[in-house]
Image (cartoon, rainbow, N blue to C red; front, side):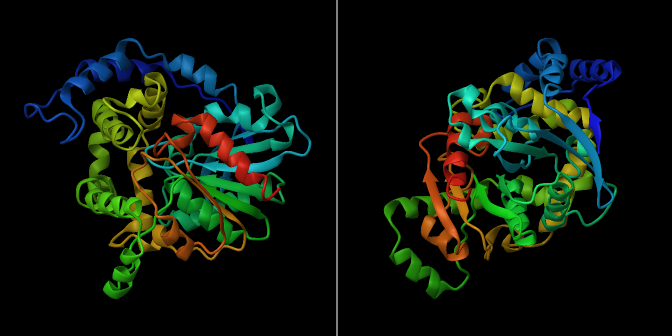
Length: 389
């Protein structure tokens, strides 16, 4: 392991501004808003802000306040934040992001998690926090290897926590972090004390008779969630089919055009967050651009998409990665944010998660729980951890 500091060459930042200034813009159908993707006027405004007002160096200074490291695991470079708590009895916690997120999602929760006393909390709730970047993402960079699926990432996290000397720890994640954290629980049951997720997939059973029996017992709220899931499967999953099947072709446009990368990511921050008119309703504009800039400056649009191909290629029902069952031996907790892209049904979750002991349905927030609602996120992680400490 070696210490790491973010220091992007000025030539890359100058190149970004030049590319933004030289953008070749598409046309747009009238009056369609967000229904066909990110609107032209909005993307133009955000790109101009990125070019003229956003301050990467300020973001860089903030990120460099957190101790960061690089190590090699299973032939891949792994970047991670490691922030020790001042509390001697703190519980180790590994936080895993997803796509199109990054370790940036967790920056505002690290302080309250590691030092609750300094943030009005109970010192007994303290954690030692580890935030790795998934291989292929950000400063974990292109892996240059086949086979980096969620199971392999979980194996890398197991090794990372071993190298850090943590014998008993909590795993937490959303999006890909959901699947990776669950697989980490399966891979390292001797050391994972519990798994907490802020994303949960509950798919209907393939057997029509079994499905009919379940529907007959569903509440109106559950039926609304089922209907939303059917609509999302039809209208909201274009990105996943492309990244599961042709990530290389996609990568040329996203790696060559910062506006292409911006639009590809920002659309999801509008659709999957608790926002009304624009993603900034849910997450600060500068924070959004720090996340987008991370993908752009590390040229990891393509390598991050490879995780979809490796984990999901031709798995039509997404059962391999998402649907379970999850035969964990340790307690499992779920935080449900109401505006997430997926609306889990608790009874169905209990069928695939036999050790489910904690279920919270929050009143606001979306897919990026720690990014959108850091206080609610921290509160629920603490609440679940108290049951396994």
